Image 1 (cartoon, one colour):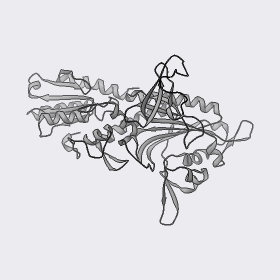
Image 2 (image 1 turned 120 degrees about the vertical axis):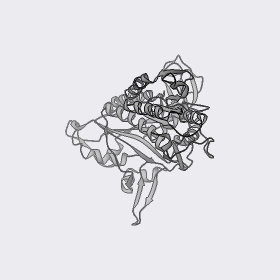
Image 3 (image 1 turned 90 degrees about the horizontal axis):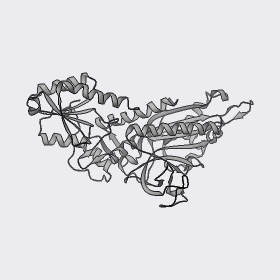
Length: 420
């Protein structure tokens, strides 16, 4: 992509009204633009990052047997009333049509997915099943803040599983937990599986996946010697207590942002809709269900909170909008264009800055945008048929011969695509 053709522009100053790092940097760098509190447009660069995260999530959900579907966001009120959520869920957006009918905008899909899947489940032999979607969700947050970390409209993966019994659900939860941890690892984040209350979804303990960040809205306690982690709101312990799991470590207090969750829905939704299946003794049974959420757009915000410096964003390789930012500060525009074409021909995605502006502006924009590799073509390097190669998270500059550059960056691009 030619940077001169981007309709967006970078900003030198943080926009007014944006308090968090992710909102400030993503707006300044031209990834997102706020329409109103909690609602953002994703611009060309931002959409590329969002899609990179989405694809990693999709690959890991497919790997554990999830089947991707796409459900409506506009729901009839009747299905929400049937489960009692029409009155109980306070963040539900409610709409009334011109004909006087009531509708809801989906903030979760249990009411849609249960009748959808259960019409195909006749006996225990049809179980287990897991379906998921990646799409927009809507919640009537009273105070939407923190940029992409808490929105009224947000991009989310939600999966729903159907099981014959509790033991089968418990086994699948462990499978999903490992898949989630793998997703976060591929993206470059470390998340902790945290015990929390079920909230409005379940009376049972749920699990939230937390990434430590000062911009987070959750307070947690985690062990410095094992994986134990708990939300402070339900904790019986306090900071500096001995870990109740391993007994060896101490509990540390931290602020974190929730990036995923798992809810044990038990048999509630099957019973609410009177939708069951024939059990092993020919008796009617209701499915044990699980709900598994993962915030795709929230992950984008968390990544920026974790990976940035005073100059801008530092994208992890797996989600960087492009493999390389090619910056031309040479008078030989044809030579720079040839390098651009050679890289694209080798399968390397490139943002090519051939704008008519100063080197200082180009370097500042490259640091702000934060693409994983920067290649500089200058008159000085061209004298030796070379370019400068620098990683965004390093101050080290390498001089690479032009003929070696496509192969060098192809290895990085292949690594990124196969990062599993």
